[in-house]
Length: 113
Length: 115
Image 1 (cartoon, rainbow over the protein chains, first blue to last red):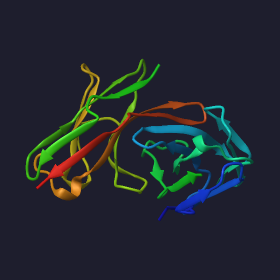
Image 2 (image 1 turned 90 degrees about the vertical axis):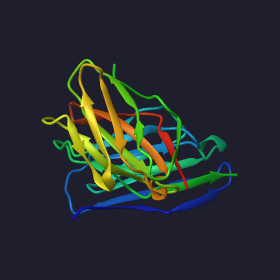
Image 3 (image 1 turned 45 degrees about the vertical axis):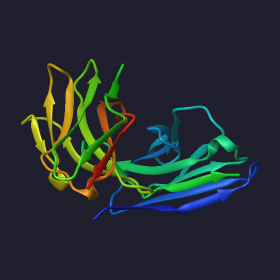
């Protein structure tokens, strides 16, 4: 069966520090991978998506970047965090030709202080 | 352009009462429709989906939704809610594009079930 792992679950980082959030998918190949951010009391904002290794599309210009070094690994990074980067970050995957909807990871609560 | 509107930001309801969470969408092409549930500090979980066929779809936890093409709606219903249904619910619309699916999420509806 397919599973998605996201870590860490919570993170408190000072302003100006770097960030690395990791997401891995098991039990499938060539998934479409996504990073979403959910600010407190708000909906989901798509940050990045990837249809294959090394292929990253950015939806919103920001202080963040994403990479996909392996087929089932998706990394969200920042060189210098801002206060506005605080939020709940969710990784998700779906199959290219499927219409089954997203499978989400359990999320990372990031607080920038 | 594609958009999703969840008409209620919060819905309070008593336990064992029925509930309807409303979702309207706009799109110029055929879409797939989804409802997700999010419990506190967790990721989203797929409740149900409409791809084609019967307009009434049944999902997990006793929820169902009806696709109404003329009204471009996909409202979520449950005949009798439980305390454990307290969560945030997201409506989503997807359409196929080159390389995958483009999905738009609604802003969410927070369901409070009171004893």
